[in-house]
Length: 126
Image (cartoon, rainbow, N blue to C red; front, side, top):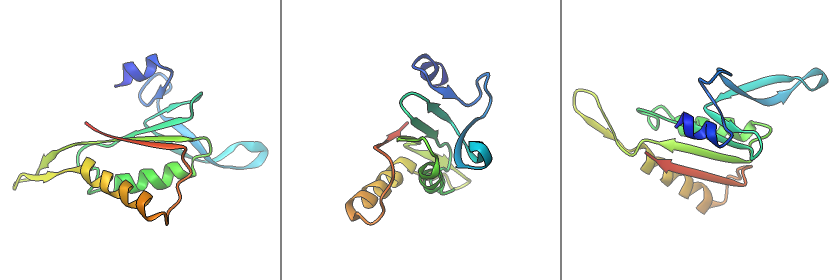
């Protein structure tokens, strides 16, 4: 995905820039005091991208992504990519991270109890 994202203006982890750090909390003279690393960010559109692999759901990656990106100062949109299906272990356990994440976002929006600071969220399965 990196080449395509670069072509449309995203800063992507692993490029010449290395890690992509976004500010969360500012200290003296407006310098970032706390930052979080993200997978990709579009500075003009303020779109933050997180791609989860493997057992992303079991490791609670989607919860971490929601909380951490909610705190990032200039993230207006969140994009999360989750695996459709991941098979692991001796027993060939199947993990359906995308379905679980979709159910989570459905519950968040249907309940109305947890407000998220984004103008929009895109969840996609790959």
